[in-house]
Image (cartoon, rainbow, N blue to C red; front, side, top):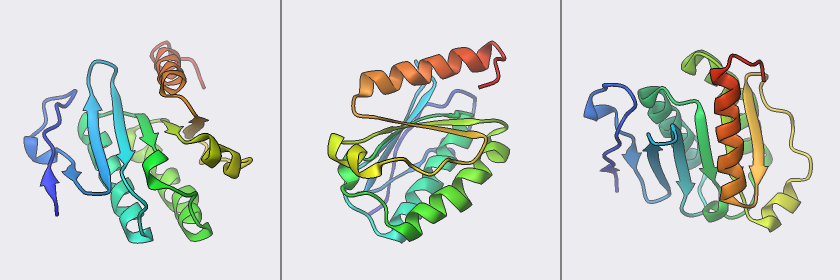
Length: 155
């Protein structure tokens, strides 16, 4: 089941660029804070994970938005080694070129998931990743990143 989600974009872009709505991932652009929000709704297969992250990237390109909230609480358990490798070695490194600069990914995870993460592998140089148990702290971090990026501060 694939529905189109109407998503207001920061720039004038065709409505056809709105991200697909799936039963496993909800995507929404928040123009008030210039953030793209991705909420995983259920555990996913490797193919669904890749499809979801590709949809997230397409939505980010359409909105010219490098500030992402990625809520993995609904996805359940941590990624397996193959999915982690795809995310860190294949997906994250392509983001800077596609979005013309660093991308900031704030992950919202359950305390149990955060404990299981331990020390995550460092992401690609131009992708900044942080993990949070509370959405307020995540949003505050993204706002701080936006302030640094707008002032031209190297993060």
